[in-house]
Length: 95
Picture 1 (cartoon, one colour):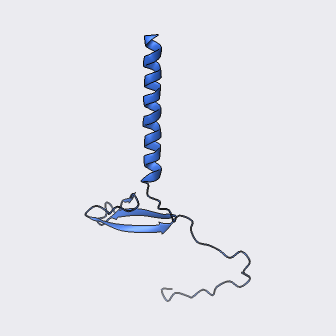
Picture 2 (cartoon, one colour; picture 1 turned 60 degrees about the vertical axis):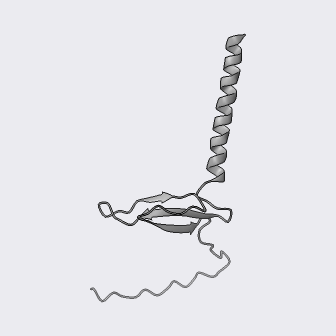
Picture 3 (spheres, helix red, strand yellow; picture 1 turned 120 degrees about the vertical axis):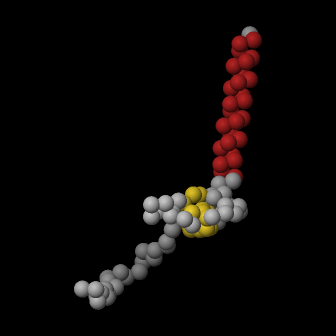
């Protein structure tokens, strides 16, 4: 009987911990209520690359980084438009 109580208590604690972590990830995540994703990128490059990390919405980026945001949905395209004409390409003077 004692073993069963320990197993039930352990299971309940694990369920609460996992549920709390999942709620925290959703409630404090990098995407705000309007679908904007927040991030920070490193000002200094490492081997020509800048690190980009997701930042919880409503928080500030750490020192040495710059804030960047983008729309989670992406670009909206009007599918009813007539795309029969392609844009003209400009020739480069580089040869």
